[in-house]
Image (cartoon, rainbow, N blue to C red; front, side):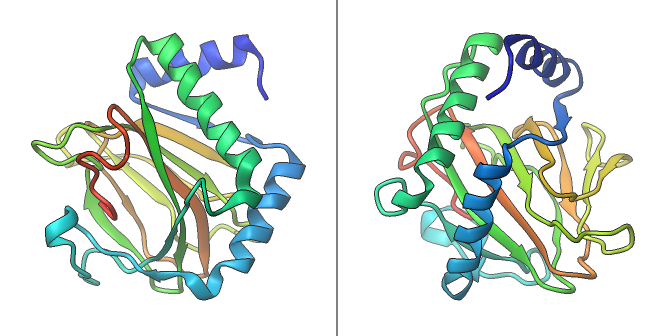
Length: 209
């Protein structure tokens, strides 16, 4: 969907600062597919949990969003979305000399007051998540609506950048080094969120982390 030059510039940014912000990322047609699918699945959203498979639990003090995990085999209407995800995986492999071999994505809905405390997307002993991806789906978001993605320095202390969740903004960042949080939403906040994996998503994944 994008030129080689654009991908190369994004790869340079991701390598240099460990995250890259891309506006107007998807085509209007693909955005329509995602927004329509999100609306269809709102009744299927469930409270997000944290932790690995055997110890997953709901902890609202840490995380209070609702999610729906995508399934390539079942969610056939999202075929062009999965094609985009796989193109991204292929591009990052080639440009950053990675060995990405899988992915996992979910819809994320933050109701008013929803938040996610500061965290990394990769736990010790679990190195399958290499690149985190967030695509915002908020056509009516305005300054003051909250729900921004707050990035922190490598130690997780000082604030580095606050990213507004405006429509069709994509953020790629390193899962293992970029501390981040979702600030409290003052209006409903929607996104497609996922991870590009070193291993297939059913091996050592941390659902809901």
